[in-house]
Length: 447
Ligand code: PLP
Image 1: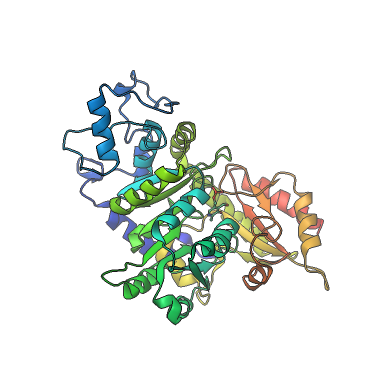
Image 2: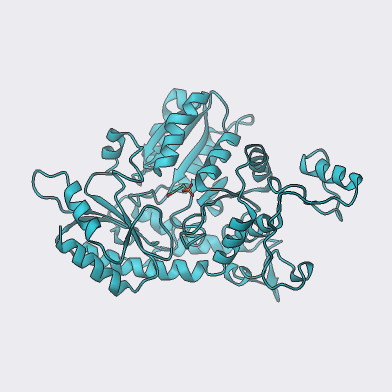
């Protein structure tokens, strides 16, 4: 087991350098930590009767003081003219803007040091809306593999219907794999987006974000900029900051750690103001924004994000260590178990601030068995873990990627990426690690 603090020094330095920005909130010249700002940033209580928490603006539309005011709000919202220095961004209609959504978007920018943020009704709507904004017929999207099953389906089965090609590269930790995917002639000429999910769901495989950024820059021309978009759901927004490594956009299923209580579905996209403006334009027309109530719940969740993610990661370290020495466990996929000789080790050291709280493992299968029966016996025997898909919530969850979250992925791709019937994915919550280990131990006895 490698200590995460020594491993993550490079990534931590890069993040703190990125904090020194002109418009970042400071106290006596010192930048405030994002966790200090999660209770207040972007909200003025005196605009809402002194309420310490923002009320829920449960309304579809907003009243204009005059027809002239309504016209002015639309001119700005539709980009017909820039906003004057003292001119407010008027509230129009909740598909376009809503106070809860706007406060949430401002607060979320702080963790990633992003200029702007767009929040969505789900992680999938964030990814789909962003890709529809970035891609045109004839373009190719180059992507890491494995990807979350829904993203895999979108890229391989839906986008091709609109003339958008795809080329995958294995999240193997080797920069050559990215270069090989990009070197195919029909890809190099047409690539518009490099889409990366790291750590990858469900194998925790790592992709070198810096190498993707370097490749995108090499392939960009004055008329065609290749964009790098990173799904940061597994480690972000606390423990990995792709924008600081040169990525253009960072994406989240906010259903997971950002929401953190398994009681909402949401997504987010962050990046420079001009790109997010374009993404928001597409969101406006597709209607994929988050509603006021979901935004309010996410604001509540952000207040505890840091303590939750740190405690979950600490619990996961103990769970991973327990599984790694268990005779019924064949292999554990967890960044904290990478050895210096592993391909992902240097990437982890460079870009991750923590080992996170996702632990995947293979049960040891009997000879002649593909392992599904053993994995199912284990899953059915769990008492404290819930048998459910999703991740990042306060409760620990266990699932079977091969038949559940990744069932949509073509069989040969699943097997090639190591998503086999003997694989189990765990999301570690806030229960006592001793209790979780006791539950895993008793369930493994039934294998
Ligand atoms: N990205 C990753 C890495 C995921 O794990 C998921 C869902 O599990 C998604 C995107 C999709 O998010 P949502 O379910 O919020 O649409």
